Amino acid sequence: MLRRCTACMAAFVGWCSSTGFPPAQAHSLSARLLLDLGHTQQQVKSKIGEEQAPTLTEHTQFSSSMAALYGQKWFDQWFSVGLYGRWDAGYRKAARVTLQEGNEPSDSARQPQLQQTLGGHFHEFWLGPLVQAQFFQTIPLHLGVAHGTLALRQDAARDDLSNENGERKGHFATTPTVSWVFLSGFQVPVAALPGLSVMTQLEYRIRYYTTRGGAALVGSAVHGTQDVALLLGVHHSLFSNREEN
Image (tube, rainbow, N blue to C red; front, top):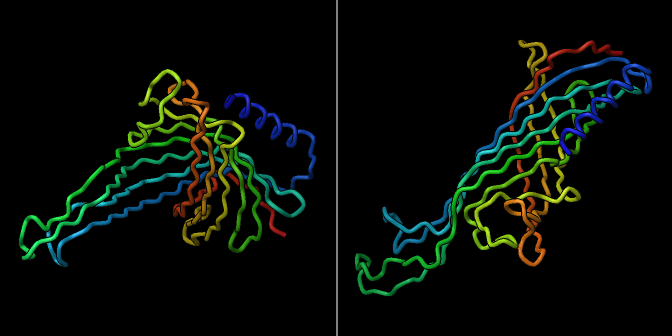
């Protein structure tokens, strides 16, 4: 499916270039890379300043977003098609806690006791076609949408979701109908380095996982997930014959 989408996108770009419709005034080829790192931790202690304490919640995630874009200037605005990629990796856990009573702060009986700890490592990979429109020239603003044609997630914490064959450790895969990412961002050119811009991008992803390990989830269940990430990185123009008015 991914190969078919890429072929259709390449054929469309070739048709536009050969026929001259819409009337393209300029062409560009560019790439970008954006990164994000987040960490959240919660603890409970018998008193403030205590060194050792159980961790109730921990969530660490590293994200990288990549894109290769071919753009044309149509009707005084830039429109681009390309390939979008996203990779996430991290670790998360959560637990319930039981608080104990005691006479002295140093009493070990007062130390909070964790119950029912869940968690594990996860990673997710997305790849698919991207369509984007860019507005303004001084500080370019762009809006886009990409499809997770290939969207896989490995999640050790979700061993409670098995497929119809009883497997609990395989990759989750999304349904093609709900596997989207919506993009919005802007870039600031670096004057000393022509073609290079610093950029930030807000990404909203929504997807439904319907299979694990290649088989449907038990009871034809669907596992819905959505997230928002703000990423920072660079945009590099590999080629451009832009004609400014």
